[in-house]
Amino acid sequence: MSAEPTSPPLPPRPHLGSPPEHRNTSNSQQEKEVPPVPHSDNKNLENASIRIQADDSLSFISAVRQSEIFNSPGMNETFTGLVNDSSFHQHLVIPDLDETLNDQDSVQFWNEIIWDYSNQWIRRREVDKLETEILKGIPSDYRSIVYLKTLQVRYKWNQDVSFAELLKRSSKFNNGISKHSDKQEVVELVSVILLLVEEPELNARSANVATLERYLVSLAELLTTIPGLSEERRLFVLIKLYKLYSLVKSEEFIYKINRSLEDKSESFKHVASQGINLSGYYKRLIPELFFGKFDLEVSLKILDLFVFEGFDFLLRLISWAFLQSDAKLAPLSGDDLLTFLESKDFFSDFNLDLQKVLQLQPPLITYENEYYLMEANSLSNNKNELRNLSEVHDDLLLKINNMKVQIEQLQSTHTEISQQSEEYNIDLTEAEVKRKALLEEKERLQKRYEHLTMKENLANTIKANEEFSQRNVELQQQLEALKKSIEEKKHKIAKAMVNNQ
Image (cartoon, rainbow, N blue to C red; front, side, top):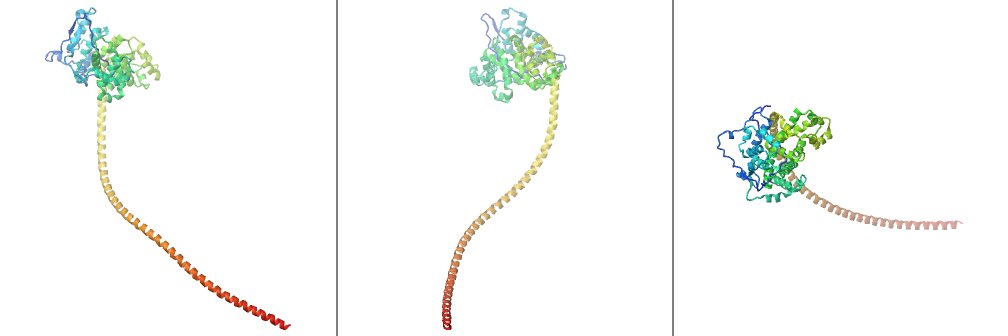
């Protein structure tokens, strides 16, 4: 594996987190304050940057990157109502070494970690020793302080906001969170986180809210089991773990999981060919790796390793699980394969050996370089495409300008036509008025004509009747005269006939 000091740090991975709780120490316990953070005027190697070598283990690389992330501005941003408290660590107390009866070497080691403000344990390349101590188990009295110090928790409430007030305001999220946990303190802690990040981050990630909730709930479940953390300090730790989630590049992380499995797992190509949404599967799986898959002791060790090595450790844990089940995955397909991957059997069929998980050394920097190269090629292709689009844009601008000229001409023509249309409408209106008047006049004349025609016809009829009447009288007179003449002739004929006899 080749590693370059200039390689970008591997960001943390998206999943659920939980808050720290206030530390309660027994009355018989001697306590002492953790010293303040040393000033930055030391001129030894304490402040020199830690360089990654080509032969460094993945654990060392992950620890270096995790420490860089904790020192980054993004991890130390505050939220509404919270401010940074430079004296926070001075108020932490740890048990005195003389009070510890078991495993003095382990307790001494964790005391050194708590008092180490310049990552000397990394500079001395004691990452393997740290992993060994984590696998042995962080003493329960020390875990809360180790978390607060390692995560660089330095929060306090400002004068305008209190934790109790945030609990009231965040109650609107309680119903949604209660679907993932029945613990009231877990529901309240996660609800407060969602309230703090509601604007603008949560709205921008609305599609991933369910994944974020499961991530926070799983970690909150664990944090509520850690002694020495008050509810407020649980919240502060949970905020830091949320920050780890928010800084992760999920696409890159998923790419590295797939590449690690592709190189090591014989069945992965078969799994990838079954149409399973591996990206969604990983997002559902990671919250369960913190809480739900294993017993409490193992889950706490996983969280311990996550705090010191980040999402790189979860990548190795997922890879190891696939490798352990390699032979069982090959015969399965479709829904049967997905059901097995999401079942408890996928992790319960073998004994989880965190030591063997830590022995996995996938070449993550090589995978990162591949991913960045693909991104660079994609950007180069995008530049060419952008250049082509720019040319098309210029052509479209010319066409748009030509169309604007045509539109102006058409607008001018339209204006002229509109003016002419108005004139024609006025003329038409006047013509309609005249036409109506003429029609009325025509109707009036028509009626008058009809009236006059009827009167003339009546006079002619009367005159004709008078003429007929006079003619009838004359004919009647002629008829009477003719009848009289006939009678006279009949009388004469009769008389003549009598005389002839």
